[in-house]
Image 1 (cartoon, each protein chain N blue to C red):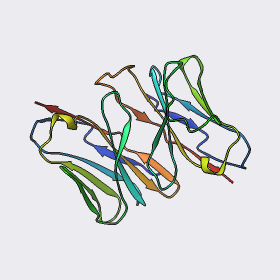
Image 2 (tube, each protein chain N blue to C red):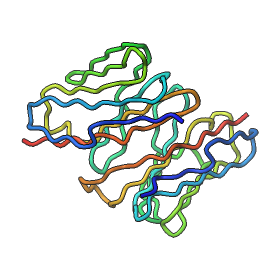
Image 3 (cartoon, chains in turn yellow, purple):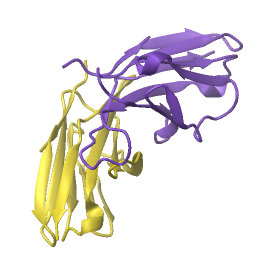
Image 4 (cartoon, chains in turn yellow, orange):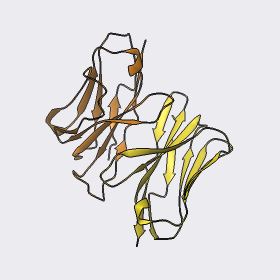
Length: 109
Length: 117
């Protein structure tokens, strides 16, 4: 079945440094979603990527979908303490939705 | 350790019938969440159990949905009677600590696909 690997599991950065999390699927995806979960909160939808090679930006966040639609990344430029949380990807394949295990981001002021 | 398990993985039922989805969280996890993903849309929160108590059920769409968590262990989500718009993927997730513990990690199950025809 479809598997989605997300790395790293944890990332500690100094405030102002950049951060990137990666998701790799064992199968070609139809689309991929990214979510952010604050400590104690629920996953909140960030964005959906559908097209091969797609790049979308939301302020300091840049999302990419690979050409083969099997990998994706979320990059945060100049992290802030408000970026703390766990970032999940969710890959949608043929009749299968799979969450990555998440990357927990800590930002040191 | 075993992950969050959900049953059934796929279910096809007729409009008006009843379906019960089951979730077994990771052993020892106090928090249990139900989410729904309607195809083409993002995941939506349904409700949150802390042990056997409903902490937040603000996402439950209507009274055709009933969730229970027996003895703070596994949980069931019953849809009765099912309607066409209930089709989607129902995800269960669990995390260990109650409250806003900063160390909490949420683990998702593989989802239960429900198709109402």
